Image 1 (cartoon, rainbow, N blue to C red):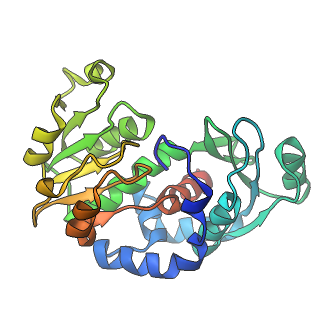
Image 2: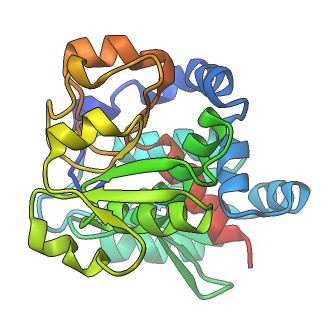
Length: 273
């Protein structure tokens, strides 16, 4: 989930398609959803799986601000259950829901309002934010799909956003040569002097870079003319920024979902000390 508010329609039916989604991930990256989450934080696989299985997770509905997104809690529960966690949704919401979660012995709580979506590990006193987890998970998925990021040119669209900034850091850590575009040009000026190329024309940049991480919430910014047989895209942005024609042309080399990678990675980050 990248810097945009989901709709109930976007998460409806998500849990019914998790097996097919996982199969598609394996075809594209060689890794399952759980494996992407574990590898993204370079955790020991067996230790991470044991931690996932041994923690009790609560999902709490929050009604503040714009209110509850219908089907959101069920989608989060479904993703966590799919990767092996023991999960329940509290009957009550807000503070009453948090109290209920603790009274029922939960170790970790997942909850979201208009500003943040977090996982809180009460034992470790640890808070994991979805924006960082989403960036980590998508960078790892992109790395697996292209068979390595070291010295690879990667364009990050929406680099000034919370997911975009974290993605830039993750890409640099994995040895990529990073370029950044954001329509608010001044907001990415801080990247200058940090061995990061700042692009100011998206159309020209998309013609230059074949590996793209789109963390922007903008629609229809990647067109068919930008897609080649060598194009690979990881797109955590909501909604996906590709036109219909571009989406069809690159679908076999595209990583995109509304919650799955971010939520799975949140859990792995939350359970590992």
